[in-house]
Length: 175
Image (cartoon, rainbow, N blue to C red):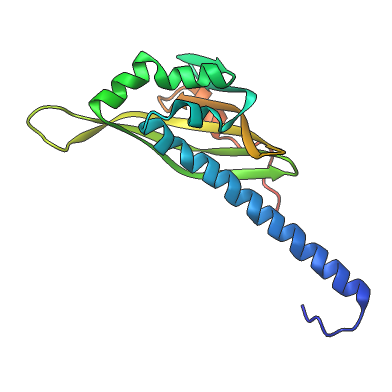
């Protein structure tokens, strides 16, 4: 829109609109970056840094397997025998792009994750799919940035629990 109209009201409205759109883009990028950090932190065993992606009382739920609430418990999942066993074999936590529903200081991100596991033996450098999951991340903006308040992860094994995680929270709004 042209800025030459000379009307102060138009310029103020236009700048407010641009500022709101910029804030939305910055929020979406911050959420994407937070989620993108999960895999490298998990694969490098940085349990404390990974736990900091969550709010202090945040929860990580692996449907049908385990649930951890709070930084110490979430770090404990990464430091635990199941995850350390994956790391010892060689693994990669791959998170796909997420669909983000942003509502002010709250957001829901939905997407897929794949855990690859190294296959030892004659086939050097061979990996197999260990786990394919649906994920739903509930996030809140805090004074220190966006943090996960709840993440649910469920195997895409035909069960309804995984499909529910991928369902949009409301019908998408036309833009």
